[in-house]
Amino acid sequence: MIEDQSWTARGACVDACPDDLFVEGAAQRAVVDLCAGCPVQLDCLVDALDHKVLFGVWGGMTERQRRALLRSRPDVTSWRAEIEADPTLVPDPGYRPRPVPGRSWSR
Ligand code: SF4
Image (tube, rainbow, N blue to C red; front, side, top):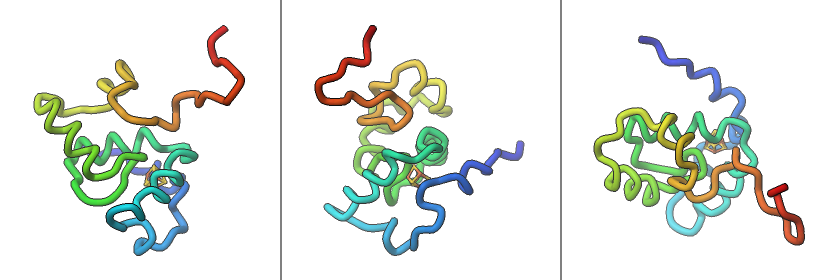
């Protein structure tokens, strides 16, 4: 089966230099911030988790965070349904409404 990879062209990092994206340590924070506003964050994260990509920031999660998630759920082979069912599995998904100080998202 051929996977739809068209989301890659819509990523917030599409024009970024790879040297700025595949960084280590504290420098990953800037990439995580970029991912937070990315319209394809979930697609990116699911792709990295499904393929066990263990280097760099993908979908707003650092390699360390993804490794921990993969270790905690070794039975999962398709992550989209898992994350959609339980968004708390990921630390700060961009597709989830973000709280605004002084404002509640609940009705
Ligand atoms: S989630 Fe982050 S790494 Fe993935 S496409 Fe968007 S900006 Fe790039």
